[in-house]
Image 1 (cartoon, rainbow, N blue to C red):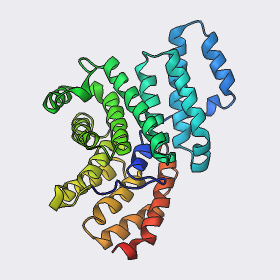
Image 2 (image 1 turned 135 degrees about the vertical axis):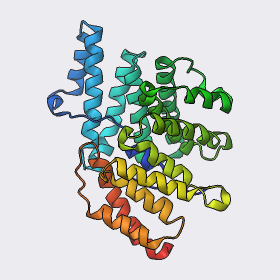
Image 3 (image 1 turned 90 degrees about the horizontal axis):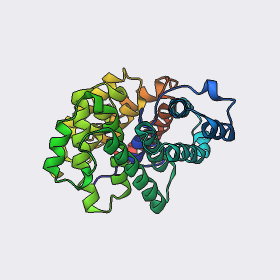
Image 4 (image 1 turned 180 degrees about the vertical axis):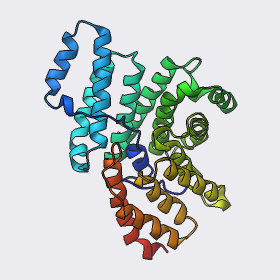
Length: 313
């Protein structure tokens, strides 16, 4: 199977880790004065569980927003373990809070995909992320507690029955599941679950095409260009998905163009398209609310791809 696309030092993992919605958007300005100890004390001493839930959810969203809007990849790398511990604490405090479960799944997927090179450790983190996402789906949606074990036809029928209100939790599950497959890519049974991830992403594009700036289309573009046509790949369909993702993000998501170049243009040996897309990435502004960190990585990736283009083509 063709390698997954690279980003932030990993393959498809980069898309998983730095996709525009792996982390929720927000701002952390109002929380700059709060230390970790102060936050935990506030949670433990709060007298109203609803207030705690609201505060912790808002903080988790704002924390993720601060990560996404930070162009310093090294700072995020160094601080990520503390973020994970913090969110684990919040989940332990409110184990039935589906939002916190989703947020923790996102963060664990992001950290493992972007920064963990040890395969065994990455598997542990991706296992945990998928478990968190499955727990969130189980608690949030009807008849959703045994999705990995269901025959595919039953699973697909369940996905087709989901409505627009389910999009957020379905997307977190799809992203976390894709990361889990990447971590277990040497297991044929795990790789077979790509069909389930694809079904989830397709349903999301039907229910809310613009969700996460078209993030589901970006994943589908990757999935359709993993293999050449002779082995079952559908690169032209993948091209359509990439272009739709670029359109829905109003060309602000530079990772979409980078993936388009690496996954499609290289697969079909289109040097002209490849170089044009990458030069557009390098010329574009990096600072976009919610996309700054990912765009920074996309530019680094674009330069690496351009530097290796003569060897590839």
